[in-house]
Length: 107
Picture (spheres, rainbow, N blue to C red):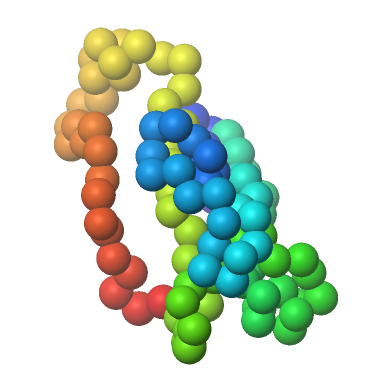
């Protein structure tokens, strides 16, 4: 679904982000990999969506009453390519080192 260089995940214990080991429902956060080397893998669940789908919650519930569904934080795996090599391989692009407080427009 995306380039094979892309891995996107959520990990509530990742020291690179805000460490949040539990969601607002008291469920431990599970590491969820959305894209692994370009391949779509997993999705997040809160208790409501997990029950509806016959799955276990991944620990991504918001404060009740929650009508938006599960809410992940996302990390983009930086890979093993050095920054200089990555920049040299891009013809035209934007170099972003950190996103903070990016909101969904239409969940």
